[in-house]
Image (cartoon, rainbow, N blue to C red; front, side):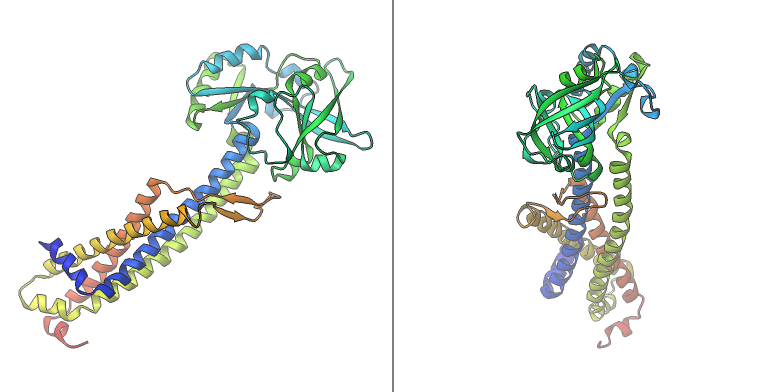
Length: 401
């Protein structure tokens, strides 16, 4: 009965009810979109780190990353093929990428510069590492003499796709070995240091130049981030001389620090937006309740108790909050599917040299959270204003406003 009366009361003054519903809807929808924007940025940082550089993590000899070695290849992983087969048998492990990193000199014939090489299995990595953002050409695949360069490194050498580049590296025996490779692609990740130094060549070519059959690390392609724990536990128990390191640790400066900084910043912005939204809802709802002072006085004069009046107002606030929050969530979903379907083009972030498109990623958990905030704000505003009114004497409430 009370809910029925509450809904009828809302329909008696459609203009006032519409104003409250729109306030709740705009506030709830704005918070929902902001959460989606925040998630979009965080997930893009995460995907760039995983699908451009490290995978979900990598395996290397224990303590390798904490020291600098004169002859690093002596501390690399032996029998990488056997380890690869073991890892692929684990649940959640979809791909395994053996790699080596090495310093080298690159020459275009006229210009010689230093760089950091990565020997990779191009055919295995082609689909997984798909966020390098190639400006020209394509990623390394099965080309036996291919090389891909960061945009800064390519400009330094003065080369384009199709040009030859000579790579010189010191092998395990101490001799300088070289390979003449052809540029197949030029990428631009937006990380200046990476784009100015990194190049990638076929793993077989790199191992031949370095005169070794060991690999420095094994990167992982998993079904989900949570699957890394399975790999870590397996390595710890079956291969105590190795260790599994997650991508967030491998790329702490770019990824984890950026995520922590952005998370703190968005937390402050979210508090500001939430405060403004709740105050806006509270003000609109309170005004609507105070305008009904005479009506509430009449209810009291007819024998309704303060508790009955507060319960009725609470039902109305709950109904308005629920309808307004649902409308706000719906509006946010429509906007994201239409106007914002291609995301928002953002300027370069700190430490990045290129723009990036941020997709707004709306999740059910966010919808529930923001809806509860909208409903809670509406209900709170209604009850606080209701308390002020029901505390008045009946005669005072019945006076003309």
